[in-house]
Amino acid sequence: MNNLPPAYVDQMKRLLGEAGFFAYERALCSPVTRALRVNLLRCPDGVPPCEIEGLGAPVPWAKGAYFVEGDARPGLSPLHEGGLYYLQEPSALSAVTALDPRPGERILDLCAAPGGKSTQIAALMGGRGLLVCNEPVPSRAQVLSRNIERMGVANAVVTSALPDALAERFPAFFDRILVDAPCSGEGMFRRQLEARDEWSENAPRGCADRQLKILESACRMLAPGGTMVYSTCTFNDTENEGVLARLLDAHPELSPVPFALPGLPEAKDGYVHLYPHEIRGEGHFVSLLHKRADAPGAPETLMPETLMPETLVPETSAPKASARGKKALSARKPGKDAPGGAALPQSVLRPGVSFPRLHPAGGALWSLPEGIDIARLDGLRVLRTGLLLAHAEGRRMEPDHALAMALSPEQAARTAELTHDQALLYQAGEALSLGERESGYTLLTCCGVPLGFGKQAGGLMKNHYPKGLRRR
Image 1 (cartoon, rainbow, N blue to C red):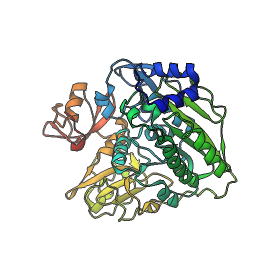
Image 2 (image 1 turned 90 degrees about the horizontal axis):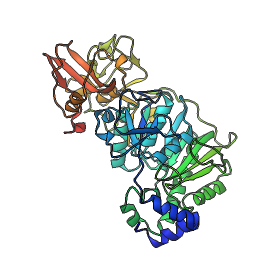
Image 3 (image 1 turned 135 degrees about the vertical axis):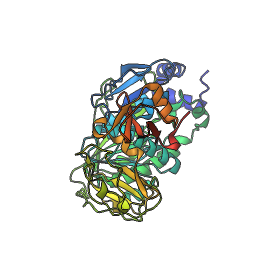
Image 4 (image 1 turned 90 degrees about the vertical axis):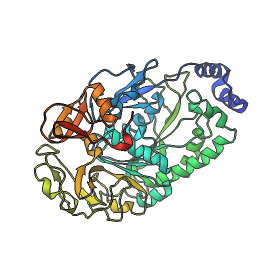
């Protein structure tokens, strides 16, 4: 028995018909579908550099994505923590593909935790442009920020704010916006049995009202000529077509855009339902909207590169210290680029490798994304402002773990390739004996994938993997 609420059964029979409902009901008894998305920032062609447990056929509608077969647990691999891939529900990958992010654009993921869609967007942006990832719930925003770091994303700002607070600071600003809205979660009924018990007949209407309020804020932030995707992981027409109809009625400057994604039904009316009995996925609703180029509110021009106010310190920053460096971080001039006269340790980077828009704040050194005036974030809860390069440890500066995750081996002054077993020991916090090596900070890799920094001293590679990330 599927133990579905009777009102939900009636709803799905109305939407799918008797035969469609029974096919859907049978699908709920089949195994959950899983996917693995290779990080295009690490592997631009979407092909992993080594064998990954359980990797199956490609997911047609998402670049670099593959189905995970059987009982494989690739999340236990050290390569997962190294940001080589992200485990994601297959049908959820469709929303970002429909959004079609481009390098150099300004993009907002408004309801972003835990970060699957944000990191998918970031990968397609290729490190160019501005990505703002927002999650109103602080605890979930912390998970989002961690995944942004793990996947080596350097051009993201992570905030934890209500949508209307963001809209006040980013009017007509973004080229593309993803609203993967909180919903009644009917697409989770196979994966999470408890979701069935939490569903109620009144849940869709309450969710729909909240979704429309979120979309109203998103409309204010979408630049004329911009694109917006509204998606949910639910099936009812109250939250999906119903919300769309209400939004379009209130905003004539918006229009639905037909689209088609490989391997999925065509969205002739600008939206598509994905059901677990029709595709290899748990289910999703995806719609694509366009804002007229002549809509009121001209898009904002790129903001000047103003520096971050000292009062705006991301929550991930180290304890406050004095700050004065503003030049591009370069391995050739390590003594001139860090707060308080303390340099980023010498030769962390190869000569010629540098980062733009350096900004010191709160005992930390950041590389800011292009196209944003950080001052506009003042008053918001900010967890990440681009790439954290270094943080203060007492009176010295140390390269941050985020820098390691954003580097390629070719950018680091020293690298050491670890075996799978050595990588597990490293991520557990153990020091490693790797033989005689040049002293100093070393980027440790496995299959060429960055795992973090170690520091060679006295014949031993000391462990600099963050304590909060270590696993036994």
